[in-house]
Amino acid sequence: MTRYSYVAIQPSGKTKHGTTRADTREDAELALYERELRNIRLTEKPGLLKIELTAKRVKREEVMHLTRQLGAFVSAGMPLTESVHSLGRESDNLTVRRMMYEVEDGLRDGEKLSDCFDRHPRIFPEYYRGILRSAELSGRLDTVLAQLARYMERDLEARRRIKQALIYPSVVAGMSLVTMVVLAGFVLPRFKEFFNSLGAELPLPTRILLGMTDFLTAWWWALMIGTGLVILTLVYVLSTPPGRYLRDRLFLALPVIGATVRFALVERFCRILSSMVAAGVQLPQALRIATGSLPNRVFRRALAGVMASMLAGDGLARPLAATGLFPGTAAQMLRVGEETGTLDRQLEVTAQYYEGELDYKLKKLIGLFEPVVIIVMGVVVGFVAIALVSAMYGVFRQVQG
Image: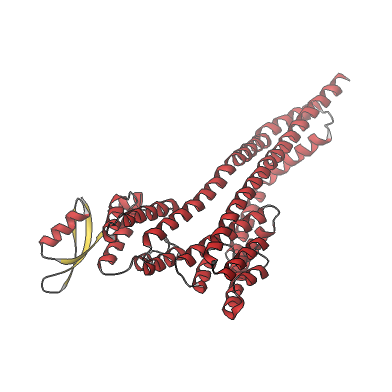
């Protein structure tokens, strides 16, 4: 049985706090109702072991599925409170289940869904809650929930493609690194003893390789300490606003990678801004929330200037083009949207266009990354092989001579 804490109103009008045990939430509510308690609010209180095993963070996939199911229930005509209750009861994630029960209690008290979600900013981003709030005002909750689910699905699919494409190069790099460690730590020292016993003169590649092995063997502890200090320094620098800004600018300046990152940010900005404008959010508020959703601080700082220019009457397209971060095609599309009064549609078209461009950039980046990793690892392993073979051949010739 599950333990629940409750807050309820007694017949005398006083508030009563307590705990009860029941198989389900419904059974607990019924038992308390039979005790003449009203306005019952329950909170699940699992044991310590259960919390450690099941209290998980809420992943993006779970939020996407939750949004899609809630939109389907609302579209089918199911009352919102009942929809939230069903989703909470069916969830396997304790965090989601408790969150949905809290949302259900808030809905019963007359709160809006967006207000209930505001209490869970780690689960529902600001742009999500802003779009939801506008959808409630316009009466398009089911449609907007479906749009939010589609956007989150596209975002997850892009992340999934990147991770899958990096698996093979990562495996190759890992195996090559393990090979080098085994050669440097176990194989090469044995060869060194063998070469020294023969007293033969070794070729240059072999001397270089053995010198590197001697250095690593003698100073591995210093290298470990130095690497640790470098990592700690980087962590500290990246924890400061100037450090994070410098990191984001560096990513944008990298060949191939910078263009891919820029297209991803433009696509995300246009997609979120389009969804919010279409849902009826005022453009200044939509621009602020869309800007906050971007992880890159260079874009955030530039878009803060765009906000100031827009409020000064310069529109949106011209300040965006002046930042130098948005491609000319994007600025031109948005200018057409402003002139024709179809900004939300043009934002969606721009997002779709750069979604396709982003796919191309990702394929190009991954296509370059795989052979680079293989070539670098091949050169390293090949150098080791050449050094060993040339040494064996040289020793053999000297012995024969």
